[in-house]
Length: 189
Image (cartoon, rainbow, N blue to C red; front, side, top):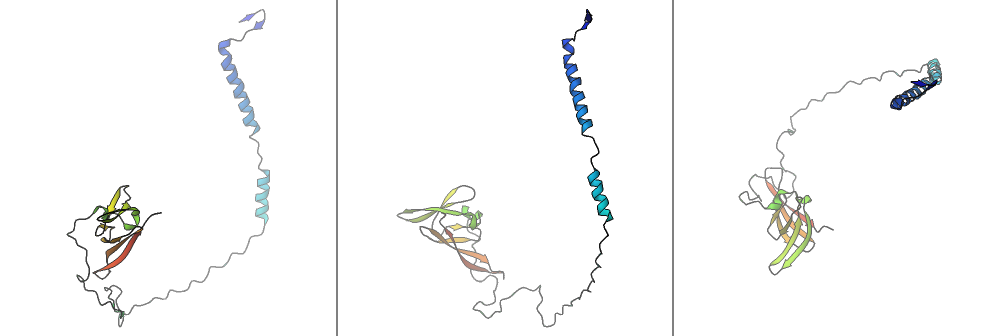
């Protein structure tokens, strides 16, 4: 609509005008960035292609594999059961002899955790003896006295002192029997 030759811009059409201005500026920016500026890359590729090629090393000689035939005459089979014939005080183990865990004994709570995951955090001393305070990975705190069991190797508490718990574990000896092993749990710092 014009009044006296002057044109009025409709205020409701003003956002369309700004959108056109922004689109124009964006188009000019994209056109300015679209030049082919790869002359230096092309020159580098041509210079590299012009260099003489290098010498290819020959393939290394493959040595034939020497096979080994295992002769069992006079040798022990690697699949037989191991026996201790070392001449030490330990004789050939006979399954069922020596110390063995008591399978009829009711398991205690601390026997479900490996010994290295348990932490001794303190002691408690009363008239009837000394107890160790042990924290388990489940976050609970347990009271342990002599003859209690802990750890997954049938560990029986032999002694509780102010800074240590001494245990006697019963572990497999690898020959079908069992052997005793000393272990301990020190007070955590």
